[in-house]
Length: 222
Ligand SMILES: *Cc1c(COP(=O)(O)O)cnc(C)c1O
Image 1 (cartoon, helix red, strand yellow):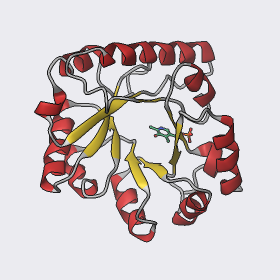
Image 2 (cartoon, helix red, strand yellow):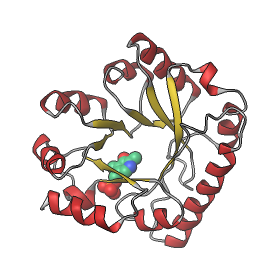
Image 3 (cartoon, helix red, strand yellow):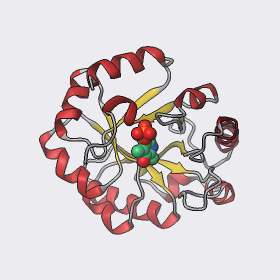
């Protein structure tokens, strides 16, 4: 795997307005350094333990995005350095992240994960829960968070028409949420959708941020 070349190729094939999260979970620090050397600065990890072990050896200007299921009791461990948490799926978790951000005297960026897949197992807010949240000014309820947008994962299926429909619906929902009174539009700009097997469709359907692991780093190593 030539990671630097993979990064360059992918970058040059996606529109300028789409940001790339290099998903480095299960890949060693050396792989991350190689991607960093190719100019990549945003990395995604999905396990707290793995992230806190890797981070100290890596460049300090990396923007770490947390993208996996997050237990409230683990927020403490990442709050001091995390740039964005994309996998916010409950109000309880929002409250904890706000509390830990306050304790560290910083702002944490969050994306709300919306349940769009047909599978029961996928995490995320329902659309109704999300709408209810943004009927109040979230900036007042959660002063230490910036609500930067939404994240979604499509159903894991070969039926790409279904995947497209799910991304299409999430994009429409994103636009609906933007029009709610509680949203701060200067922050709420990101629609994170698309992984290795479906990112092209995601971009066609309005994604502004793709999360790519396998295509950059190969199959997971440990
Ligand atoms: C692992 C993961 C990705 C990257 O998936 P690839 O298929 O390896 O590109 C993206 N998003 C989330 C939430 C993930 O857990």
